Image (tube, helix red, strand yellow):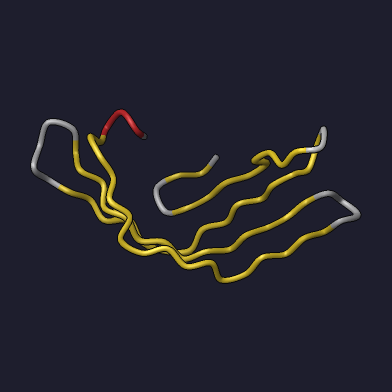
Length: 75
């Protein structure tokens, strides 16, 4: 994904909810995002907008990314 674009501009970012499940050592963040991706070697741009989700897991005494989704990217 990153290799197709030369730069990204964050146009808007808003956290909608944050949930922490201490029993499962998980946290979930839901957010709205809008960003502009500039195509590599071109003046063209692509705008991505929508809702995203990040799930973090507390393992070995620090938080790691367990799942990540946002417009244009799913990991």
